[in-house]
Image: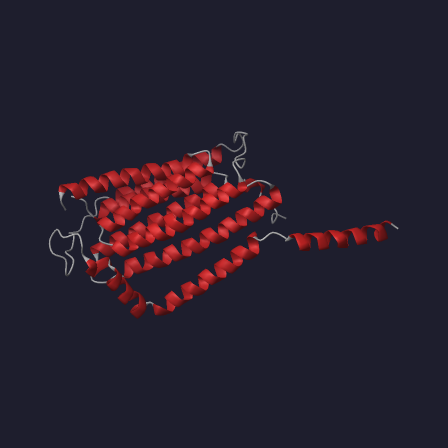
Length: 101
Length: 196
């Protein structure tokens, strides 16, 4: 029997994997991909809770807004990556120190 | 829940977890993007198995159709020489520590919520075992709740996307050739006067 807990465990593990990727990798593209994995994990939580509370569609509604915000975030993040690459010829996030001092 | 549904859940979960791990562990960004695509496909299938049909379709269209394509475009634009070839020798403690902390947090959350198993509620308007059930996550149900109870946030999201488009263009746009020549000409004009 697959219960709500199974979906929550899957979501927690996906979020953990995404956050580990964001914290340990230094390639900004892979960091952005890790953020997408984390957002997908959150969406899975919303949809699973919504399935177990089917009298309204609020969870799916929140998942829609999260998807929209994720699309906007990917567009702006990738634009920043392109701009940084033009400046530094690298997407290594340790070299992004233009605002350091 | 029937046996085949349980099998699909486990198969899709394993695919999603392995692909997510591949997305963060692979050395080249293009493999990472394709692993992200696999995770997204598996999660879309899980959404459909949770009767969120429209959300699964949106996941496929927006993530697999737009976001991953945008990632692949940018990776191709930047080129394969993005990963520094030198190994990350300095600061080995911080990655190991962050792996331990985040793995501990996620595993403790998983252990805490893993035993949560309320009874699966039946869906209104869904016959038992019929997968084509439009009352819960179909277009009509989602559109009703979206335009009735969340119309203002919906319009605000359109403004957000507009601002994101403008911001992305403004940030990613390089100087055009005309502007670059104009700036170079201005610099060449300034240089001899300052030298004298």
